[in-house]
Length: 253
Image (cartoon, rainbow, N blue to C red; front, side, top):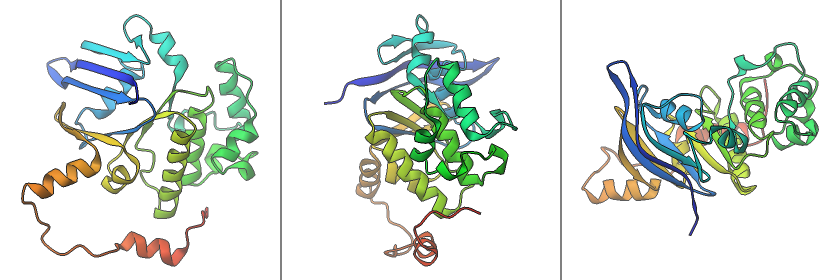
């Protein structure tokens, strides 16, 4: 059985009198893809940012790969990769130059072309981020999370705004990251995405975890409660039609 790589116990985050995270507890196993799901304002991004050492907690305990968040935040930073927003990049640097820059910040010698090849962007090596399509920007953002060869990768809504082809291509990238040995923590508003990618999910609402299980387990629990969809589910959906008609190969605008 896999070891626990992240442990969160009674985590609380207050903003003045407003309690955004209300004493949640969960564990993430090494090597799994774990999803944090919930509506906007549920507290999932705040929870991630606390684990990532980017936001201070009000109370509770967090361990990451055995390191205590309160005592060893710098050790945690060394072993995690956090997806950056595209607005955080220097606009006039090429992709290779950005990778070398981040590699220097981590004091690591990086081969930019190997990293770009991993995310299918080798042909865009001399491009700038502002010249990339939406899907390309997201893949480059994920590439930057891998610069320090992290044990844990955090992805916050990585496919928002992407077309179906780019979205499914990114799913394969996430699976490949896990296959290389990393643990992946992901937030998403797409339930089909969570169902395909995640080994387990925690559903957060109003700052509390209201369910935590594998996607199949949660679905089975709902069905066993007597739930029925109002109409018969077809064997395919409109996204399947789109992918079938336009092809599975990755194309960029």
